[in-house]
Image: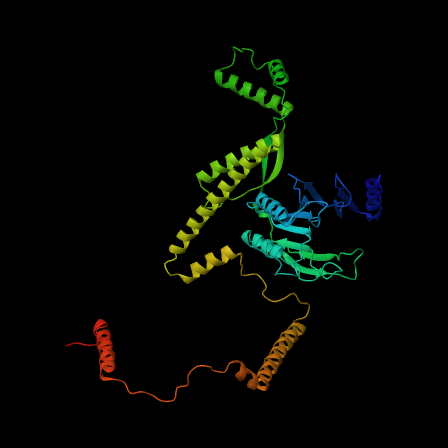
Length: 421
């Protein structure tokens, strides 16, 4: 009954021209995920598997600028009652990231992670950061998102696609603050799309096709025509019958360019991984899940080794050419020449003044620190006072010590060709 009341409320709050999709938690109270989007937007949602430590939803948005994928998450805070742990969450989240490790579509992970990201010394936060670093991901929220002053809601990406981001406390309608962000549309996939025509044989009825083909009369012998004409008549009849049972369909597909380090072994390993995944999805058995994870890890290892070898050879082929080397490094780091290194700004003069004030304040702080050190100079000397024996006099070097030093010098000269007999 409570679920129906909540559903009614969410739908009623959805403004005109927008659509609400909600996915309530099936067991227990609270939780659930909901999205609100324009009715004109092309949005698809899916959830390929479930995790015990968090709820999640894959949201794919297609537009004229290409495709972008959002991974919306809600992680309940661990407690004695729900028996959730940080170790379980990090393991599940790592498995989720592995699902999209080879996906070239721009991805944004967002939601309530219930991790105190404002406490970098926290053990769980450190482990979470290491996990993001392993997958080349970056967390962008740097302001408190909860009224307690903690950063719990995160925006995580692996590409430079977020143009601006703002945590708006004034617009809060709960204990969490809303996050507004805008994305760039530089990732245009339209150039990588092509139209294909094909026949769909999914619902193809062979018996009806054979019956219609016989009725067309193409199998009857015609003595007046030669073999070429008979073949042409037969092909025309088959084509027309196929158009009736499996008409030609046009479809726009995304053309994926294979990475140069993908080899035959990786293709075979991917095939084995897909077979293992389908078996696990069908049975849901733990043993099949372990087999799938083993196949998945094998694919990842093969890709890692092949990719390292490929770029090692590319760097070796540079032969000291710095331009080629920097081009390879920039490609690896995702750097492009058209990226704007300046912060987001509306006015260049105001931006210049901000830079000026920053360095002026920096110099003032340095001067204040130097003056403070001068004032505390006596205390510094007391803390670092020498406690050993004082050097009061020099003792003259003996003849043996001088001969030993000269021999070392001569040996060095002879080694480098600076001394000849």
